[in-house]
Picture 1 (cartoon, rainbow, N blue to C red):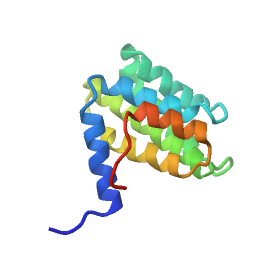
Picture 2: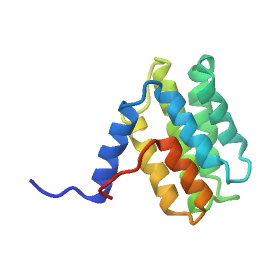
Picture 3: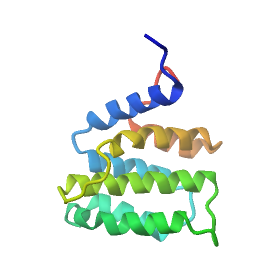
Picture 4: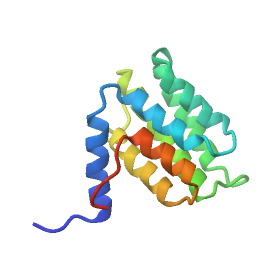
Length: 146
């Protein structure tokens, strides 16, 4: 058996974190909220947060995802590395909400498994102890072997 790469270990950890949640969309929203507190206001991220908090809005997740993706690809106002990770996290939250709504043409089945790894990469990319602490709390635990 070969050793797993760091990316593979993070992915496996993310899968375990996501699958252990009794309310996965709520957990995903809490992780996004923790990640977004230290950033400037992004209306697209705010829309993803509101979506995660309101089950009746979950079917609208594809539209919110589309707005997030358009903003993240906007070359007239490029995102820095940490902002790009925040937007990736918000996109994953919308995918999880959409899939939980049972809509046709679901997003990737493993979208929720990537929430933990993206949040972990955001933690690693910042020297803000408040952001690191809030993400640690929202995630519930950190990977031990990374």
